[in-house]
Amino acid sequence: DEGVEATSSSLESNIATDDGVEATTILDEIDLSLLDQLGMDNSIHAEKDSKMPVKNIMVIDDRNQENKVEEEANHASSSLTKPNPQDMSTKLMIKEIAALGLPALGGCLVDPVMSLVDTACVGQISSLQLASLAPCTSIYQFLFFSFFFLCAATTTFVAANPPDAPGLEPSEVSRRLNFNEQIVSSASGLAVGLGLVAAGIIWTFPDQLLLLAGCVKGEMMSLGKSYLRIRALGLPSVFLLMVLQGASLGRQDAWTPLKIFAVAGIANLVGDMFLTLRCGWGVKGAAIATVASQGLAAAYYLYRVIRIRSPTHQTTKISEDGSAAFSSISTSTPTISGDGAAAASSKGVALVWRGLPSMGTVKSFMAVALTLMFRSVINAISYTLLTRTTAGMGTTALAAHLVTLQVFWMMSFVPEPVGLAAQSLIARDVKDRPWRVKKFLRVSYGLSTAAGCLMALLTGVALTTPMISKAIVADPSVRALLLVTAPFAMTAQLFCSLSCISDSACLGLRDIKHLPLSTTAATMALATGLLSVIRRGMGVEGVWMCLNIFLAVRSVGHIALSRRLKGLLFNFRGRKAVEHQILTSAI
Image (tube, rainbow, N blue to C red; front, side):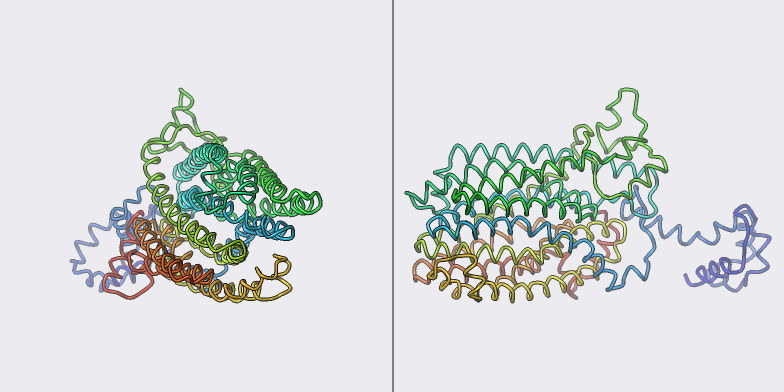
């Protein structure tokens, strides 16, 4: 009510008094006509308020509104801070995305750069060895996609519980720190276990997996089997790195994974050049260099996070039975001192054992993880279908497909940091600053689209420039096919950037129930297209045309099936209801 706001403004600007001063001492300074606007009898109002402290008069309306929001949103743990006009600045949002996204870019590029280095070194030896990498790369892409939920889910949960958010009580700071540490420690154990299981399956059934990926029996199968088994040794490290990177990104720290992955990339480059080219070990040397660099990165990352001193560990009051205080985060809210709360602002999550997670935490994590895993598996199957279809077209076509795919993947990871930053920052703002979500989402889409267009141009340059393509592959017949696949790889980059930012936005909004359906629809469209390619003999260019269809259907599926995303991006009938849900619901 404007009357209450005017009264509060007059009091705040003209009155300096202690909280205990009675209202009767300043009622003469208040224009009683303002109280008439409230529809109250002035004498009754003055009599009642004569026993009320000044502070209560000034903030009564704000308190009522905040309590109403808290009750509607069920935010018992933290109250929403007031909107700050500076927070809505487009320039500030771009800076936030850049501060997190640019360092994350290096981390995202390390793995595809490692694969591209493997491809380039092996490609200088023979087309046969290069072709033998294609089914192996397809298998490891399948594993990467299938288990990327470890990184995405960890990022989402940690980002949604920032312990350094403004206005938090010490008990809430402690609860969030404890929650994050429990999520990271449990996810790390799960990652190592899944890595060991996956490595065991690959070592036991390498021939069957290579046949499924389209590998031809003979020397190609023998070369691929060696590479596949050696790379399997690094899977526990890779999965653990996913969790630790997710924890860092959830705390808006992209520099730590960048530094670690950069060192690993340099080690892989040196190892590839020495073992593959100098020693002549071929695909075996490339696999050994990759596994060694991955193990080095995981070991140093572990060293870093174990050395982080947890504030809750130092200042929490433990119950008499010791571990009982941390047996369930839903029932335990240990207190934290001022020093501990200040330490909460430091980036990173300590890797400490906080006991087994509560059933509520497990259900929440698995609900996100299983949905993401299903989507990832379907995606991985789709890319495997692409490689398997190309494998039936001959060694030259398969080698050209592999080179195009490696360049495509390296370039497609450039828009990825925009998505990672959007996921982390949207998940944070939904809980503590929800009024920023709509504009932040639109800014993220704009940046991702611009990055996709730029990468499409660079993809075309890399595949069509003789000097660059010759550095990747020596066979001229393979380079000739690169000129055919280049236009389709360029358009796929744009669709890939839109699909990536849509994935990340839905993760940040925790609106992911539609992901399996949209991904399944895209895969069915891809499979139908590939059948046409085989029947009509369209060649490797037809395969890449199908990839465009797959990515386009995924992008459209997000907009069509996600009500929250559609409501925040476009003006449609239910937009206001969606915005109200974002503002008043603890997602």
